[in-house]
Image 1 (tube, rainbow, N blue to C red):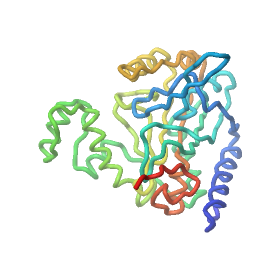
Image 2: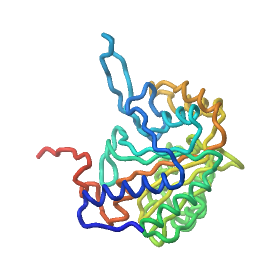
Image 3: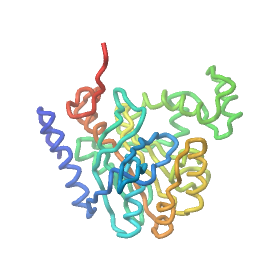
Image 4: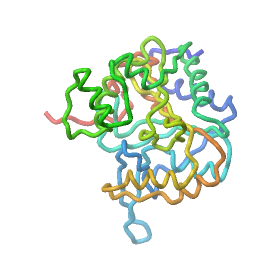
Length: 303
């Protein structure tokens, strides 16, 4: 069992050691990958940070990784073994109580596994930090339980449902914008009695996950209203992933990572997950804001 300490800096060091020991005890190999990448992660919900370097007399563009996802998958194709990494990641346009442009991420990949295996594994990790139980809740059930809304993947049906429930919205809003507006309200209700894993996401929110029977095989974990983890059964079909990536980069002027697509073709079934470690630390220690962690990035406010 994890032993808490009042000294935050010592607590953070012990927290990281505990996570490392947990994964090593399960046979995972700790790896490192470059922070600077030739290709950005083009997940539509993230904005990468471009960096220009002078190398061998030429100016070249690189990207600070938003997660080690692409690099670890490439590594996994060459060295097929369960692996994890703890690293700093960078995202543009994010700053607030739970957001920073720089934060610490745990990312891991498990071979011959699916998202359900990861949920069980995270449940074991949470026990180490004092969370004895967890619940798995289907997304559609969560919408009905906490928002009183029947979720539909059809935009017109969803709009009609919202009208009948008294929700106001702009007619020009599309399905995705409506979903995320509702989802922000939903998050506030999750994970207070026990950590809550949301599952059965609509197929259009699959990101890099496998889609079966209209649902994406992915989950998000919430504790005390805070999003902690995001994981899924990984889609390995390069053409399916290419189509998603080409849709995501449209109008964003971002390159598609051809190296990643090549690597996917050489991988067995696997699943991957990421955890924002400052957030997990916060819920373990009942800390309300990243401002309370003295080692995190802080923006100087002008008077």
